[in-house]
Image (cartoon, rainbow, N blue to C red; front, side):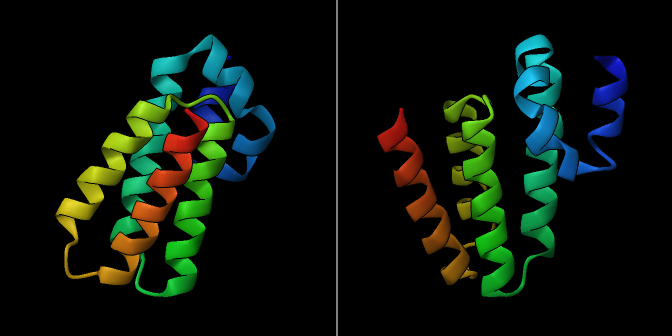
Length: 103
C-alpha cells in the first residue's frame, strides 16, 4: 500500500485505478495528497478548461472515497483564496452543490 501511496503524488492518473482501495486502507494519507493536488491545480488554473478539469477531479475524488466534507472545505478555501476568478468560483460552487446532493 505504501508503494502505491508513494506513486500517487507523481502519477495521479493512477488514482482512478487505485484510489478507492488506497482511500480505504490509508484514508488520511490519500486525502492529504489529493487535496494538495487540488490546491496545485487551482493555483495553476487560468482557463475554463482547467477549471473544468479541476472540478471533474473533485467529483472523481468524491466517487473514489474521499470524504465529501473535506472536499467541501477545500472548495470553500479556494473560493475565498481566489475571489477574482469568478468563473472558477462559480464552477466550484456548482461542484459543491453536486457533492452536497450526493451526501
